[in-house]
Image (tube, rainbow, N blue to C red; front, side, top):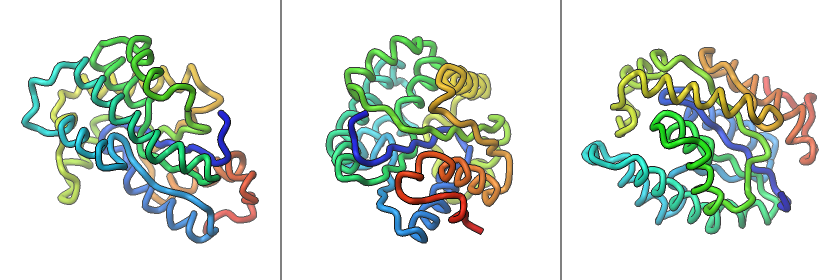
Length: 222
């Protein structure tokens, strides 16, 4: 990948704690004065946020699986060209909540469209851009969904309404992706305290991807 910055993505099933962990990680990045942006998929920019609203609207229960996959790819494309790629070219670290792996796990595996088919759609959208590293926050679906049910802050979206078998297939899909991409995907046990999850991720980043920014284990957050 011919970019100056680093592209770090965060994946996980519903209720895996990505939002919580990212809020803790930006404090770490701020402390070290690292150049970064935080963004999300689908969304991150105006056009993609509008597509997000269409995809996740709980009233859109009739949405076809292929329509869903195409909408995600469209939102991803616009987000990439308008926000992600320019930031990477400027030497910025991009922290992104979800990327193409979500489509492979959710639409490709759980929806049964096929990972190869969904990958083809997204190759057209992302061209050659892939994350430098992906942190997959792994948790049993029952635990993740119970977190959502207990939270008064998180809005329930259309994917939360799927049956438990769907969420198990999503998790299975992520494990398939991780097995095929061990050089990129790092599995993190998300059934731990937020501080321990943060520590596990920071340790992995400091061992590898952040070295180019002058960060080493000596900077480990307390």
